Image (cartoon, rainbow, N blue to C red; front, side, top):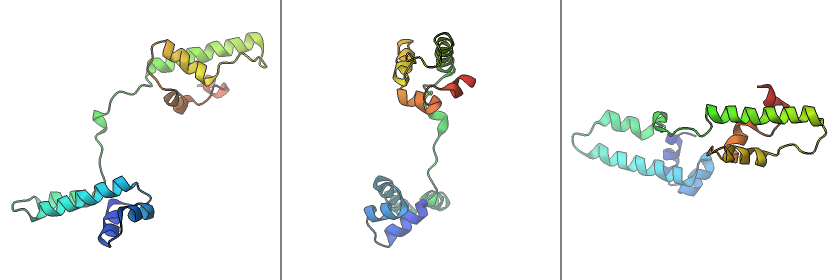
Length: 139
């Protein structure tokens, strides 16, 4: 559901909670869109207002400036270090055998990355690589 649909539901007199339920959006988002819409209407009434720009902003979906986002934590250095850890794990498996019980857990791999000085959360590492498996080694 778009911003226009939310505004339409609110104009019908629905509460933020009901509009959020019907659109699948968060109540805070519904409230934000409605408040922006009401402010835009007030701006339209002012003399000398840029009517076209205000009308476009009333129903346009939000745009995010991705150029100003901060650096990602998962850098090329983290990738290389993780590949080295997984390569060592592969060598250990070859030496000991595939049924060994000394495999690194996801938490231990994360701890190795942190010990190496990388500020990365275990969630970030899991999103990129998942658990340690043969697929990771083949990349």
